[in-house]
Image (cartoon, rainbow, N blue to C red; front, side):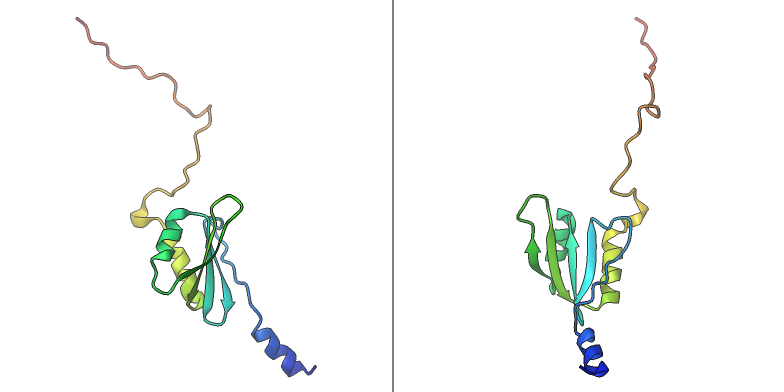
Length: 118
């Protein structure tokens, strides 16, 4: 096989480009084919948003417990990255979805209130 054919075959192979961020388990994408990306989410609210997009269609889902949905859309990878960033970004600078629980040493003791004298 010549180098040209080998290189051409590689261009048409599915190339996975996963986004790497702190919320990777919430929403990831990869390039499935030229001009086509797939989005995988484990959150029902994000799946609802993806299902409402006119170009997105559900192509896979979990059947063995847990919540998992995979959507496919005709979209360039750079646009998919912007979409993921937008979907995971907190609106108006509000607190992130996951707030770490306070440890026992950080929890406040009893609260003293003013007593009412009769």
